[in-house]
Length: 316
Length: 298
Image (cartoon, rainbow over all chains, first blue to last red; front, side, top):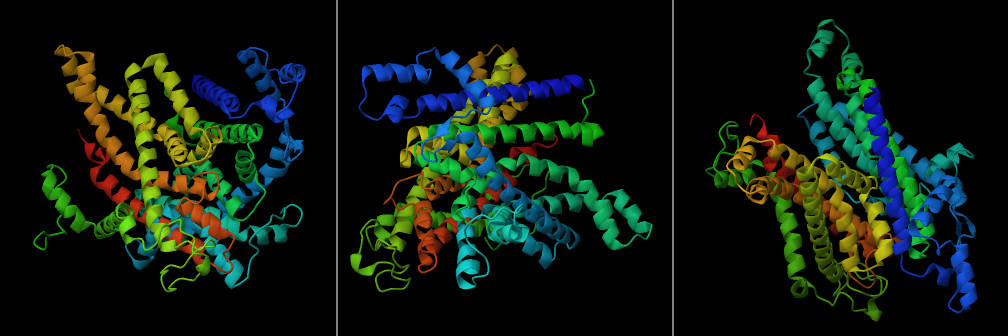
């Protein structure tokens, strides 16, 4: 067991190392001379040398990498020259909370609607209900989310004027206001997940409902809802949790698009604006942040497997 | 066609003749057939866009800016520059399908090389190669493509490269899994014992068994490639205006959604219909042809 955990952790660290090398290379490969960016077009040879030394570009590449990584781990991510702010503060204090709020609301909505719909479709297998939610599941996974967002803006923002279509209100400052502003973005982001959860819930529950323990529960005369929700659903939670964990990356990339549609100042907007403004330091920070988050969640899912399901524990 | 009984499934144990199965598949899966026809329609309109399109896709009709759909001469209306939306959608199909196919080709080829190398090398090399694949997979494909765009810059060819490289990860992983599985089969061992050169074994016996499932993967991933590339354009960092790209058109229409909703609606509908059709086609092909679902006992 210890060897298994150590192996996984080592693998994850190695992947993070590769990602950090790649992000570092990104900054090196990025078009544009960093000295020209800092000094403008005209500068003396002396200033050039000074800047070279100041940025540490006169040292060997490996040393530059180590310095960069050490700074990065310590939270010294440099300064953004367009936002005129410390990148670490910008990314972690301003942008990331917006993205996480959006992601949490979207995931919550997806689970709250997706699971019951999947259960309904499994219980009423091969009926119109089932066909309807199958159609929804298919459309939901294939429909481009950014276009869905615009459709929602048009219907609920323009035609009926029910919900605000842009801006972010922090739910920890004004919960209902935040919720109100999150309705359309969260729904936009959640459809893909909702559809996926419907599909998974249905597929797993149909199988689970044929198990002997379900027949036993029915034979004991337990009410139908109890058989389905307590005996059935509890047994399909594992695959559901796993897939949701592994698909976190999709949630993050969906958030990038949703933020652009609804003009939310989150991490996705931060990265896209940085690409447009050629601020490679921010692109780099955003990529490291996303990758680290994603890799750590994967590690957590991997490690949680054997804890949740004894059958998956390595025998050696 | 009418003589074929769609309700009789082929017996699972006896592999039926390939040709007959293909025929029956269209009958057994009406939605698949319909989706295939829709997708084919997009291919045709992409191929014959200059024939079908009433206007040049970048011609700006100053007299008819933001004309609503069904305006004379502009069936689907015009955008804020007075460009004909129908023509732009038809030409946009070229970009969507071209970028999608190009990117998937790069991803599949890269994945094939990386996956084969990892699966055949084994040991430490395999471990390192798979960690490289892991680090590609550590980023969602869109974010990875954004990173590549940051280096490469914008443009149609750059989008193809960026999306293609972003797709290498998943392809490499499936190829490697297939190589591992095929390598353990008896016919590979037999070929080796017969004294065939190692490269011959790889080329004649392993590669064919890997390429087939890879082709199935390709059909499934095309829609992802199209979605990611149009997402890049929507974010404003993919192809550059005035290219008639759907993602770009939707992005331009976003600002005018309150008084010219067709500007985003028309290309959005085209994109959504294509993606839904492709995903139905992909699902159908996977269920029918995925060797993993048929290998079963062997």
